[in-house]
Image 1: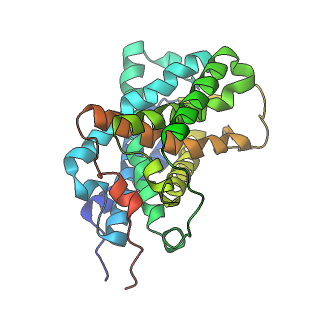
Image 2: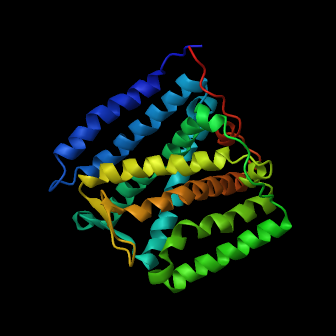
Amino acid sequence: MERNFPIHGWLGAGLISIVWPVNWLFSNPEPVTAYLFFPLWLGYCLFIDGLNVKRTGTSLLTRSKRKYIGLFFVSVPAWWLFEVLNLRMQNWFYTGRELFTYIEFFALSSLSFSTVIPAVFGTAEFLRSTSWLHNLGPGPAIRPNRGTTVFFALLGLVTFTAMLAWPTAFFPFFWLSLFFLLEPVNVWLGNRSLGERTNQRDWRPVIALWLGALVCGLFWEMWNWYSYPKWVYEIPWGDFFRIFEMPLLGYGGYLPFGMELFALYHLLAGLFGDKKSRYVTDGLYDSPVRESS
């Protein structure tokens, strides 16, 4: 069945085609990125959502406009959490930050941060609907029982503590510890968790989140490359073979980042009374394979 590409997908494509070149042509020394990074990523979010509609007939936006907008609001505190942790880690900083007041920087940054979760979840849903991932065979079973959740919680506590106590040695735990802390909490509270699928040996949602975050990471680093202000990295070790500003090994951090966002979203959804919401998981758990025309 051939589906039309939706209007909001065309709007997203239009935003990307206009904002991307403007952002790069008029970047340094003018702080254009501060005002254009949000519309650029909004364009990406709408475009990838449109691709999902065309491919499968469903998407984050079409399943619930209200919850789709909610993803943008949830994304702001989610990423500020990482920014707060980075005050201790000092893994990245922003050049051009001095051009703005604290209020301006907070407001513009929050607007840009709002696109993180919609972009990652939309991309993960798109990848989940591909035939190769749809047809992927079963993997090892990891069951969300008491032993596993306690082990995950202890592992999260140890890695989080080590990260904060010795950031020079253990800064990679930045992208692992939160998932191990939050996944057991979601299980104990009765929220959605990835363990529901690994319990059935279905690793496709996990892999889709890994790759969805990695694809977004490549775009984040690429669009940051000729931007100003921009973020730059300073890490204690492993800083070699940079692709854009990010060292090669750093891209590995994007893989668990997708799972952390999933855990954060469902923790917040559960706190607001939506414990068993399938809004996000519909596109990751039971995504239809792309139909031939």
